Image (cartoon, rainbow over all chains, first blue to last red; front, top):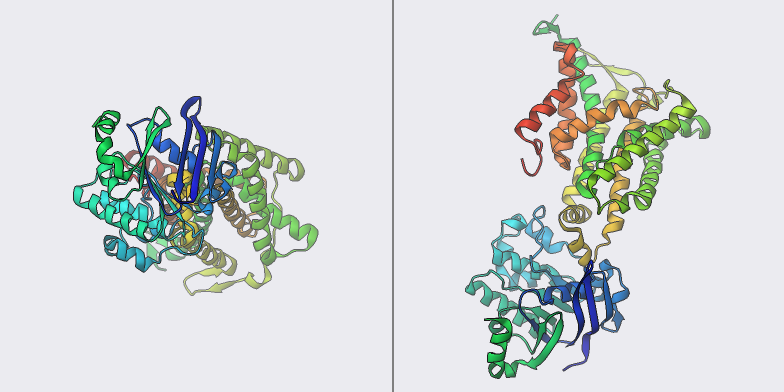
Length: 234
Length: 295
């Protein structure tokens, strides 16, 4: 693994009194793509939300590029260089596509230009004046990813980007992520569709009951298939 | 003499002008209320008191510091905005996560405290505020006499309302505000300091109320009761326009002011109730208001 960009140690998190994460340990190297697998409800989304600081009740350590994220208020996490693409996509209905695209503040130099983003996602260029929520599910997902690419974030947290999308759209999302990976973007992907993830990921982490149960490189996927099918119930 | 349905044209235009001026104040006040409700989900019952506060700050600046109308037009809204932002930081920000009823009760109490304090020191009789010299007198339009100050109120309120609409609908700050009303947590996760944004928004709403107050000072007298007299009508305007709708607040403010003026000409007995009758009809037919998002 490359030098760790994101490092979680003994991460615990709670929703009110409900203890959801029970000591998550994981690392993502600079420029690496890592996929977090697991059944529904094991804590994958909570892990991303805890990293961002959306879930505030946390213990343990979250280090990103040498900074301790646990001490930062929610709005400062993005400024450390992390872009968040939520599961529900979070497209704003009162904003058009262009306004949605321009909404997240630029946090560092090196982000993609609007032209580069439109080259990566040509659909968005055609729909730039449409209200955000008039887009198809696939276009909304593209927009949710695209708007983080302007910001100069060095790492993307993607929560189930293929959920509910048609296979042809999933392929296009995959191509876009592959392109980002080639540009050196660090990606932490939460995904149930491990066949999709296997095309872009370097390593897998598997989560059970709010903790990491195993980790393996993508090359071991075929050998691990029976174990994964049992773990994920597929 | 030219008449319309038996009413002399001068009387009709005169009442339409009065309606337009009232509508200017309704629009500015309901705009502030709509911004605060739209962004903070707070039903700001203190809005009338803030309007009164704006007028009194202008009056006190003139009486004790010799600061005239034009400077007060900037300084009074600024003073009230700072006061509002302190209130938001110290109190309202603690109520966002509970039922909106608590915000309503708090601002209602705040209105009573502000109004009560001014009644204690100034009584209920109004204090005069002179019309600025540059706007004294009027213009004879041939068919009616148009007081310059009243024309200024209409023009200034149109400029203020248009500028505020532009700020909310066409700028990056406005995009942050609109997005925050939908999903404040996600906007924060994008790196925007939403709590500061909410404080500024409340400050803008308070400044609009105070601006209306200082503009109203030469038209009406400066009185501790001036806010409570107008605020119920303004709430009706906001309901008709659609709670939280910026465009709805502006259009409905002017329109209902004109309707009120016309009613004074054709059926004066109903002039005090016509806005509430319209509100009741709108609530029955389009509960989200004429410009409300769910309408």
